[in-house]
Image (tube, rainbow, N blue to C red; front, side):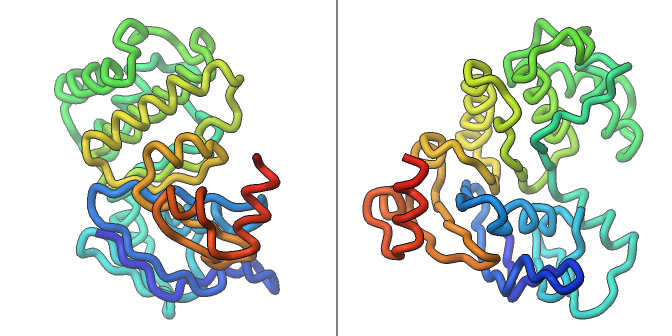
Length: 244
């Protein structure tokens, strides 16, 4: 499904990713944990090509990108269409309703009819528990509700993989549960997901594999039970002791 080889990313002299190798099977949930500055978000943004890697290759659903040479803009756009991304900040259009936000991408980018996009948008918003908020504007919604609109909007593009960059970090604690539940429901439906999060309980409950990153490399990887109950690396133990 996803095959990443020797992925590097530098910003000037600063090496942020130092040769990441990772395979993700279809339908699996991969959770990335690690301290701030470890390269998790940069890695996720490279998967979406919001950042163009400095070197390495990414294969996704039979489409391959090789970053040892310059990449074309149309190839970036085509590759990015395979991914749906949910960021920390909701980035909804403030002048559009929840339903209009979800319809925008399919109509403008994919050329789907308004009627079809509306039907799909209603289905997706209902799936994330917002079937009664279709005509609400972002300012009328809580942070958690806005984030769930963001999830529905990403899903409306029919991505092969969903990428989540700390989707609950900007939320009040009591709003986190509904967003995590929407993500759990996606996982149960078989959506391939790569998630950067500090929500260790979510990682324990939902991840097929947990990856601990530090200083731009994968330090350790394994099942949630292996990582949280019996980490092999001292650096992983330090991190988990610190957050617990």
